[in-house]
Image 1 (cartoon, one colour):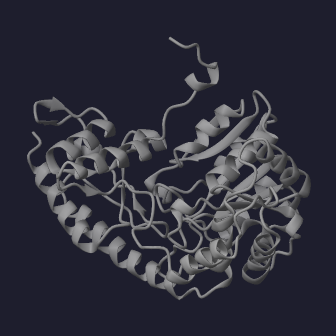
Image 2 (spheres, rainbow, N blue to C red):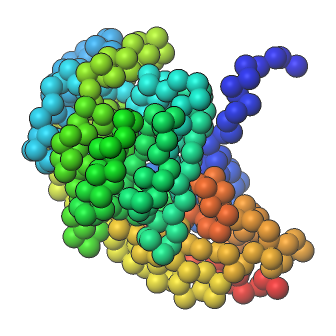
Length: 398
């Protein structure tokens, strides 16, 4: 057997992608699977964005670009944050990468040294901890509960920060919980961070997918003193249904962005030129279809929350943003189904896929042993069908 690098043993494959692939395989075999595992919008990329890519292709935009991305796109990103949050930044302080995940990876590689702590509120997006490990860092989780809406409190952050803390990651709205931080909560967190010399990674990838008039705020806009220590990570994947186009970006201090660009130059070089042209149109073009998608997601959220809460043994908070619910299934643990005792969320997810033909992602991979993640980035018909199947499968447990 080939001897592999030790770093490969520190991490695990992305469980969300693995489960989506398993559900896709079953569907390809003719099995009627309701897929609640997908971490992407089910809508198509808007036509005007696709048209921009076609035009770029026809105009010969098929060569290498600047490693940090084409200048018009970086300028558009700068203008977006100036217009929406009052943040002025130079296009030199922006790097475009192959997705927000790639941006995060580059940044962690650029700033984390062996043994540095990376603080992560839990539940958390599955890749944060593994990317920190790949950078030689030590992931340190800050647990949250349903009682706080899955949001950390300022005093928790204060207690978790140490001299070893290098990075604090804040994802709002959050994957997997949909939890979003309001103005007062961000100000309280910012006040704590002002007194500690660590970097802040603000993962804004779901910033536009927000409900019930929730007022979205930017940490740097609220706490300008943190400007030189904050990296904003975002992209076009979720907002514009462009997950496969692989365009994300980061904004931050010029020296950190330059270091991330150096790393990117030795890996992927520039993001795909044609996808950059599409992203430029996404950011600068009409936003009507974004609003349409959000309205539809909100309808679906309301339905899935109500139906899950009607199932004995399941309780589910109503998320403020993103397109996931994170129901508590602790009451199902210890029960048996299909001759097997359900001892963990992973067991519950396996049971639901086998018995109900519903795919969900177990909470262990998000840092919880009492929850499972369902995505409502699917049709209302599938949501109603999937919830009915879950209800029937739960009723069979003993």
